[in-house]
Image 1 (cartoon, protein in one colour):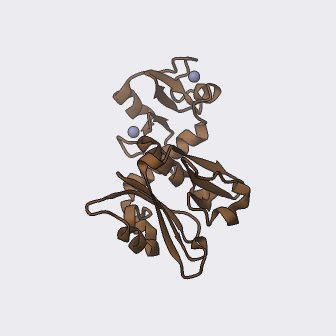
Image 2 (cartoon, helix red, strand yellow):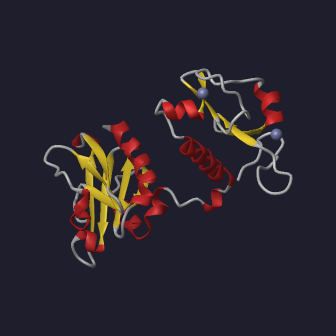
Length: 225
Ligand SMILES: [Zn+2]
Ligand SMILES: [Zn+2]
């Protein structure tokens, strides 16, 4: 699952070596000592390799994952997974999901027609079938095609200037989620009515497994409003 950042020792298979994470980086015991010296949790005094905990600097203080969980900062599992995922991304760029315009597939042309000269798309993310969201420095776009646009062959690109939007929100249900743009006169939606929301002009629905991508998009949107 992981390798020591310094010596490459693996925590899997024969001759496995114990590894732990300090600030999103995997270390074996030897390399941790030679790289960071002796560290301990500022709260409970726990030291690396004494227990199964990992470590992270929070507000300038080294905390163990047990104390992070207790303080409600982050679950140990989430910290480990985010480190594993971040590493997987840098290690295998070829298998990354397409980003930017290429992520839109068939809706790419529709969006490009609605761009002003020189306008650059910064975020593009696909939701459920026929739905996508995109952001440029000037606009946020809701793209709907097929049944999401109201007809099998239809295509719609709804374009909002940033000053028309006061915020955005993600609503998560058990299977589906939605992201809706908020602003003067824009309706609010209920995630339980996903089939209706699919056609909404200020919302995009998605499978809950894709929530992470939409949370990233939400951060971008919130930077602009
Ligand atoms: Zn090592
Ligand atoms: Zn601790």
